[in-house]
Image 1 (cartoon, rainbow over the protein chains, first blue to last red):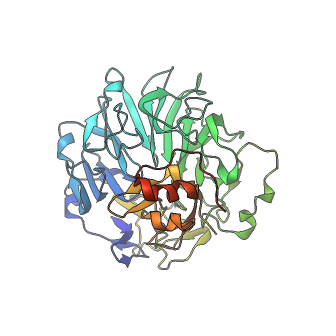
Image 2 (cartoon, chains in turn blue, purple):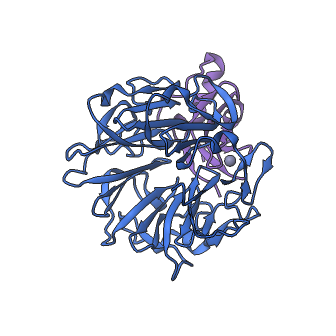
Image 3 (cartoon, chains in turn blue, orange):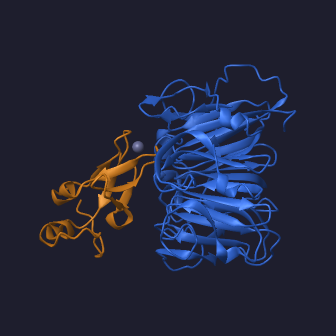
Length: 371
Length: 82
Ligand SMILES: [Zn+2]
């Protein structure tokens, strides 16, 4: 597996291959959730490993630790087959195949959903959903979203900080809630995916429509209820940063929401909000430049950087590069996607995936015999 | 350019750092001490990167605290001192 991230005093700026014995013995990775400074790896066998910062208990190993450098199996969830994980700024969520939701880490804003504002250093089952089947959790900076499985009514719930409208539960300004409440404005649509990062939230419908709520992009006002992007395009994946979002269409094109902040697309022309219609309340989707003729298969957004994988397994990154999170061998910002050198030739028989944390990036390369 | 404007009530008091903090996109924390706030400083910096935020607060809330020794963040509506 490849990885480039900041560790201690050393800034790693290019793709490095780390040998994590505990990871390779755990089997193929099906999902990596990257948070503020911690990582949750989910294996195809339903096992979970965590590493990184643990100052709020977000690693779930039953203790507060400064930092765990090596992936450590989460033994407390060993009796469950985990199917989905998410990492927020300093909290974590885990979903089992039986639809149980577990959370741990920072609970100061109610983002763990247990009805209080306590932090937890081991995953605890969220009893609110005990009679329901949870499919996904999405952890943002200080909030969480939950998607229920096969549910036509009340599919999405939010809890934690709601100051910027990121819970989507009410038109009124809500400071924070510690028990899940239904996200409004999604009635009559079937949601298949949810996302949260920073103070942003998003949901993708089965028809490929994208809804966003929370903090406004490019200085626009906050959306306290989900709003469908006025686009006829059909999206298959969405991912959020702290000031931008990316959406991938079924035919492999990438569009971006927002992105006027540091480095995301630090094109000086983009920094001026003049391009925005003065009375426009709607977020505008821009096509990501430099991708003509390239079919994109997978996208990821960090706080202020972005990454994608093309159909040929090529990784491209752009945005804020100060910490080497673009993997391009330097600390420069990029306004357009730039190809990352993998350091070896992919023989095609592998699945490449890229995952972004706040200021770091991971790539997984899974040989197809294991896919 | 300031990365963001953040109200003091959205910052967290960190006992260990003796500072008000807010998440920085690099993974570290923007930090500002009470002493800085009392001096009217409105820039909170991240020790790990070049980014900084503008803290929106009411300086009187911190000048009063000198006598009260109150560690709680101010409850009043924050006002920019810019
Ligand atoms: Zn920083």
